[in-house]
Amino acid sequence: MKPPQFLAIVLACLTSLNAIAQNTQTKQKVQMQYIATFEAGQPGAGIYKLYDASDDVVCYVLMPDTASRKQVDGKWVYDSNSLGSLSCLKANSPVKK
Image (cartoon, rainbow, N blue to C red; front, top):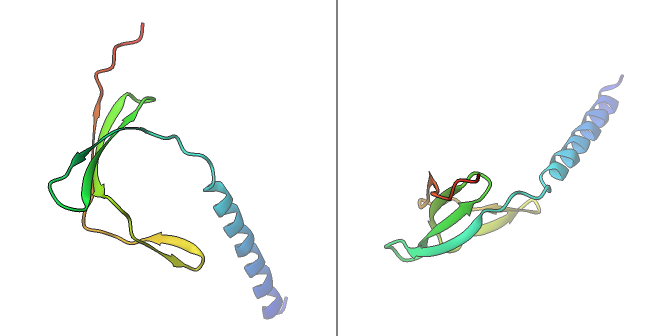
């Protein structure tokens, strides 16, 4: 097989794999229930309380109020920040009988 033909086959396979990978990312993800927002002690940030009913877990997320992003190659890329923390604990929901 000549190198140009081989390169064309490899590129076609990679394009197909890329399309498959993007399709698997579109599945609906399980959502946590939003409970409340608390002051974080600094401007532009908040502490968000979320509840995961499937595992009976409460999480507190410290994060910026808004996320900055830019478009790269037709996809959105979120900028990094130096603010972020996640803490989760088991909730005290009544035991199911």
